Image 1 (tube, helix red, strand yellow):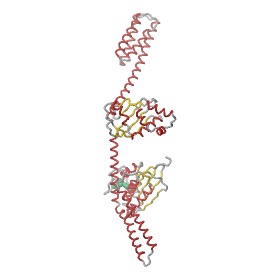
Image 2 (cartoon, protein in one colour):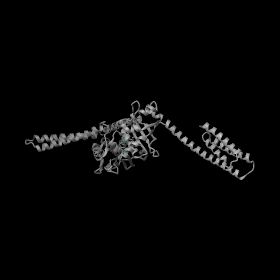
Image 3 (cartoon, rainbow, N blue to C red):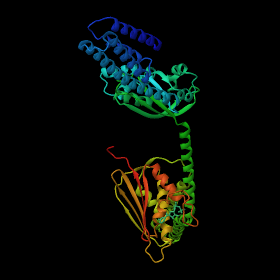
Image 4 (cartoon, rainbow, N blue to C red):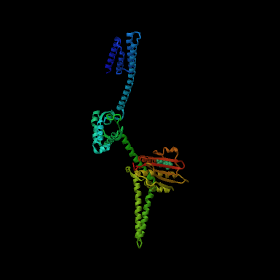
Length: 503
Ligand code: ADP
């Protein structure tokens, strides 16, 4: 192409020069040099183009000189100027065109480089047939992708086969263990397993609604049948409504997800360990909590026996004693059930939780600690709080940790009131729990470290309590914060979002 253009340009230039010099037509023959300039676009650089344009102008002037010498007849001179202007303007336009072409080529090159070298798998796909199939559903009166899904649940499999792969980068082949594009192309529909179907329905709904992008995480198989956890993004360009060029980028997050799962498992393990440590701190309370009902059982048993041993046994009193024995025994077993839950390694569950119940039970468990430290407790629990979704044992762990910290902080108060107040209230979208003490508080400098693992100012401290509280609260979608007026006390507050009824 470039050689042909070069030859054609030379021939045309020669022909125009001869025609212009040897003939005496009343037209500006030299304007035809514009063709030479246009042809040069195919082979010349910017400087080359300028030189060619200058040569064409030189030839124009040369022809004029050969024909007219230094005479200046007005018509031929006018034609000469018209030709020079035409060559100049076309050169200017061709140079601009050349700039645009090189910008375009550069951007195309950049795209190709990204396409080939990026660590993200990129698939170029043609969804034309899929778009037609979706439009067909619309034409048949279906109002939404869900309605289409209900009438033809198998459509998702057909849809996968209607998505045509046109190109894929090397990362794609490496990620899916494919030898080449052809084998990947034919295997692709089968790599979409059943567990990816709901994600594909999401994509179909996005196309149905005319969205310009869709993102989802799901699982997909590679060509060896290994499951990959992937995050994929589909760009559905609005300027190509036929969807003949759809870009899909895929990130393999299998390793990251495994690491996250490992981290969650480690966190759960740590939460368990700190719970057991908390229980260790609570031994006195626990012994008391269990001992008290057991002592009451004994007392009531003895009383019952005395009523029985009378010459006239008072069966009503015996019955009352037995009932008290039953309720005390139930209390003891209830306490043990709570302790069991706290000490258990059960997998966290997600059930509706009444936060007030969590707080009241926590207070019961630390009752002895509260009494021993002569602490006054004020509970301000809002009525009718909506339930939050979460793990009651974990949430109780948070409340217990915060209360024990408050008790320990106030343990140093010699002459100051020791007042613990626990509040609950409902905000717009979350429940707030406040735990306030009248302890020494903490300095501004300490505030940043409080929630860090292993940060402790206590000789026997582990420094894990607040860090665990924070990870439990954030796993429930909430936040925890601490405020302190040094010398006046500390307020911890955490929020747990609830599901709105109208949501
Ligand atoms: P630990 O109780 O084992 O020290 P935590 O993570 O529960 O671990 O607490 C970390 C630190 O935060 C404590 O050592 C203490 O300095 C500070 N802290 C926690 N609660 C309070 C509080 N109510 N008042 C003052 N300081 C507190």
